Length: 393
Image (cartoon, rainbow, N blue to C red; front, side, top):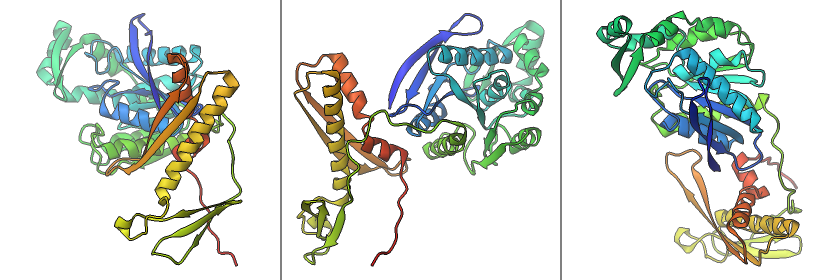
């Protein structure tokens, strides 16, 4: 995956900054992630959900709103306008978003904005409130009264200090969020934790009841409101990616497969506990497990064979691209190492180290590395595959 800074003009002509998370293949669609009130584009939930969606082939923009989570000096309406501006800017850049994802008050902004955006095919919310006045209940009543009387006041929320203006309070009270939901006319996915202590589960019920079909509700079980635990953010992203796939274009390969092969046969040799003779066409070799786990160490282990496939495909794909573009690539090499990561999703990590020989400039090297990320075996591992099994005579 790659990452890139993306800046654009907000609704008030203020310059907004965001980050684009690129998938490893041609994106099957683009999304925008709207963060929560006390968060920002680099919050744990924003980063983890965006990157997990990128693994699923969906490119994501996450950006800092002018009002939400960056001082509270704007209005909710201004944040909705900024979201509309982000959609317009991405569309002009050739990345039209078809999916809006909002976390907490960012979810409310996504619900309010989606109805006016023709390119948006679906909306997903995480821990979103059904009534925007809900957020005012988290402020100190004394400071809230001061803001209404004097025009501005500092309040604390989630351990952070925000400047709240009278215009923000009035704007929040005037919004009819459930009215936006009733007129959404988009597929809606609602994710909410039953034990959410910041935005209660009754908010999800109200949104679900107000929405028209197609609509779906997924429980986040014991997740906290901010999705602090990596597993909760990864789970939310996996569900969103699977749900959104119905409303996104199918993934297409950038490059043709080097070879699909004619099948590989593994047959026990009877020597040692695990030794196998492997045959693919006219090619024969051994596979085995290391001595440390009871094998003879006479061949590559299963995960080493998978790593070998990724390494070989990477080199072949870079060579094919270099020949097509006339790049002065003299020799390419790839080392792949597989490991398991406890408590992370996905748990399997393939680390790929590439060497490129030849008079290549920085741009040519970067392009070859980008192509390496899109070799067919890489895409198979990233996207996942189906495996069918049957007994034969």
